[in-house]
Length: 212
Image (cartoon, rainbow, N blue to C red; front, side, top):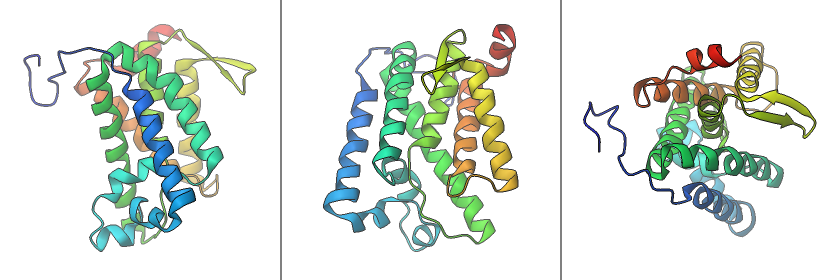
């Protein structure tokens, strides 16, 4: 590993091992377990504040591999595969795996703290927190890339990140969006931003300013 502090000591090995595809496969296997084979296992792997307080300390980590339905899984895994593959090739597989899991974990912990303080008990599932982080990282490294929203509307990657952030912030503040975990999505963006600043030595805001 390169010299530096514990937090910004990036992996020297930039070998591409396609961890993105492996993460997709893990998510699919967990979906088969929780959605088809043993549905009750969802309550052991999803993040449920009352369960975490009862000793299920792994849930702020495992929740990111559980999904609420096939469409939820499909959308998240397509996003992970498309954007995650590009980010992984850019920063290396080990670094990408650390980034993805850490962003998902910290988003889960932040969500747990928020729900606990609010006295709310929910069943939190989905990789969206980590995937929002991946999208931000993608926009940082490929700021001129154009993403076709709904397959029709061309939007440059940094603009899409800013739009998503604004939508999630509005929805979280004003309670719009039903059962969507807006705070988890915002946490994913925040921790990805901090990861870029602290570990990658990149300021996403400055990148976005130069390319918008």
